[in-house]
Image (cartoon, rainbow, N blue to C red; front, side, top):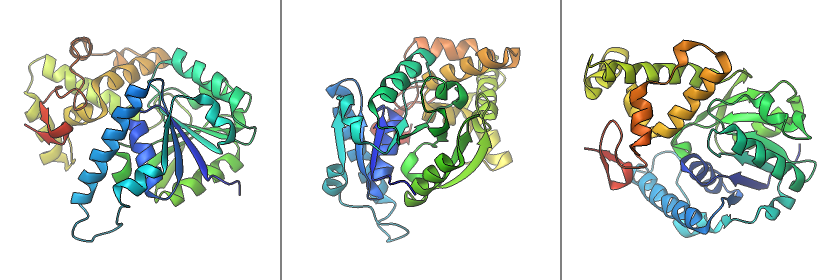
Length: 295
């Protein structure tokens, strides 16, 4: 089995930070890349806050004890220098759901990374086969759709592209096992299973709010009290980020050309206004304490 001791994470947004944190706390050396030092400094702060928050849930000695904060951070190298990918074994990409951006990233890293390197796209909706076509190694590209918050979610959606090899799947599965993750393997399609269904649900919930069918809290409470969901669709949207929701639903609309995926005008309006959910402090709800409490 190919070694995966050198792991690189591209994109230091919410998901990239979560993936880097999850890798570091399971003993991996991680390179976290983004375009500016300011973004990376914010990412370091987010990891610090996340590990402190996670420790609160482990103070009773349950499950897995996290490493000390200095030890965990020592395992992560924060950089804007893409040439550091020259020795990486495995890349997990987490950039926003814009095809032109992803295409440029994959063409860039394909030219830098060694031939053995596997690319995993942590994408919400863009097809893996399309991403693989931007590289000279389509058999070594797959999708790993991590769930937020990454360190606390035990299962991922793994996506097999048209050319993805069995060896690539085995390498990814070995890495996920070391991370303490389980996986569900699906075939490639825009949005895969999770977001093909979830984004449609979230978008329709926003239509219900826009049409004054019910208040946001009541929409979410129906899903929690009647169906036993831990979070309602609007709370989930705030957690994911309304900008990511909009980009994902736009990818689905573009891919299927089906009017059921038309973005709700209220969603577009909120994104334009900068009301992105937890990461901005305001979405369908207002948040304090770094988005850890709803008020």
